[in-house]
Amino acid sequence: MENWRKRYLRGRARKIKPRIRRRFARCKTTLMKIDYQAKTIRITLKQGEYLTISWRSTWFEHRVRGWTVGEVIIFDDRVVIPFKSSKEIYVKRVIGWDSNELSLDSYEPSIGFIHVDLKPLQSMKITYERKKAMAQRKGRRELYEKYVRRERNREKDFINKLSAGLRLLFPNTIHVFEDLDKEDLVSRKKRGKNRRKRNARTPWKRIHRRISEVALTAYVDPSNTSRECPRCGYVVETQEEQIFECPRCGLKMNRHKVASINIRRRYLEGKRRARMRGFPHNNEPEETMKVELWVGVTPSWRSSVIWIPMKWDPEGFEAKGRGLDIKQYQAQ
Image (cartoon, rainbow, N blue to C red; front, side):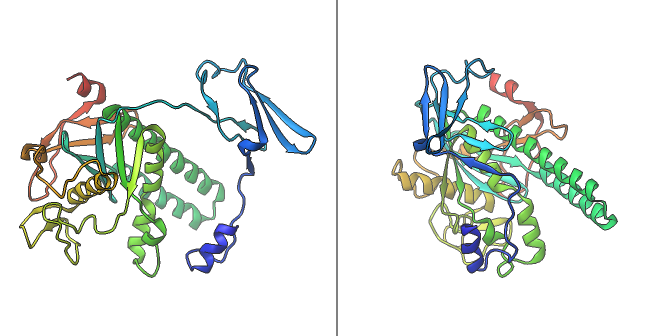
């Protein structure tokens, strides 16, 4: 409620107060006493009243051996015990991701450009928007709620399989994303109705959050990522077309690819791991800029698909590749 009040006073929230859909309580670690030998957790509800939980003889007991317990979450019908483990990961590469309406575009010198196709996800969401609108016109609330559940489940399935495919394809990698503010993207003062609807349809935050659960992630400032030249640093005033053209050095490239290079460079500069003003760099040959790897999820929702690398077109036109399974690609 306090968060809603602050957003409402700033003009970023509606007057309708939020309602609690599912009641839950998150326990602080100071209110928990954990016995790892007995595999029990004692939670202090109030003075002299406790709740004891045990994970002994459970199906996941052997999987969480040696792990530590986080903040327990109590629902009306169940208790969720989060476990966490700490291990050292040797980072091999850093990939910068540009989040767009129909794709996720990234760049890494040893790989080249990476294109994640989000068109199947957008097609699914548009289809269910029409179905929900039809159910609302007919006044069928049960049918509308069924479509909402199906859309949510299929979106979750798509994101889970996409994040799993990226984790298998790029192990020991830091994925750098833009720190996007969804409220600015759907603001009535800054965006038109059609653009607000398209921005609200794309679940960037959910994709980023899911990838952060299975891989290392970082965030950078999204300002001018697609308007700054990665070669000379010149910032153009406006950038509406798909092709970025630098008036100073003459660079001509797809603006999504330009943004992915800038996102990666900002992270490296912020962490002081490298001093790379742009590209091509001394250790980044020009040939790496001509390879593009396509990643996506099959329409049948069965598995992730990786396309073989293809030549990059300087005019920004996309090429199509042949479908290839993740395991087959790694075996080669």
